[in-house]
Amino acid sequence: INAWIGTSGTRTPLHFDSYDNLLVQIVGLKYVQVYGATETPFLYVIRKPTSNTPQNLEEPPQHQHQPTQSSSYAQQENMSAVNCELEDYTEHPLAARASFTEVVLGPGDCLYIPAKAWHYVRSLSTSFSVNYWF
Image 1: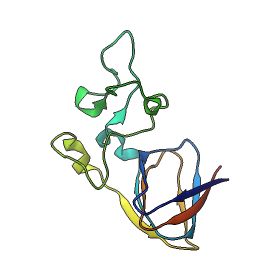
Image 2: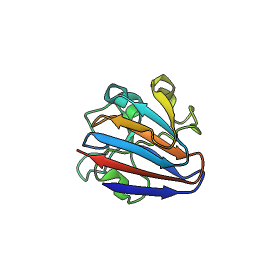
Image 3: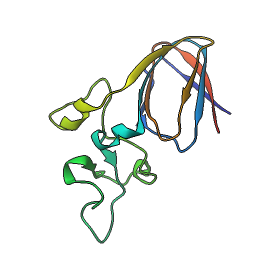
């Protein structure tokens, strides 16, 4: 079990987890966007740099995003370069095609997030949440 405490405006960038997830809101409000794994081609996955190829050959270049600096975000390849709610679609035009579900969680609400489902979270107030990966 993990505990998440934050002030209004605290953001968790768009990412996925390798396990199913139950997110329970205890105090305050959180805004959540959830994208199915099928939306991955539109989400500009941050890829770890490779030494032998300039690009990941599994995806066309327009779907890739190489980090500009050394970043632990790239190590698991579960982070997106898309800046939810503030996206510049000239930089990431395919992101406009990604569909998602949005929800606001209040005290006592529980959200199931399937393994590999992309999600973005922003606190709408000072908040406290817990989650359980399984």
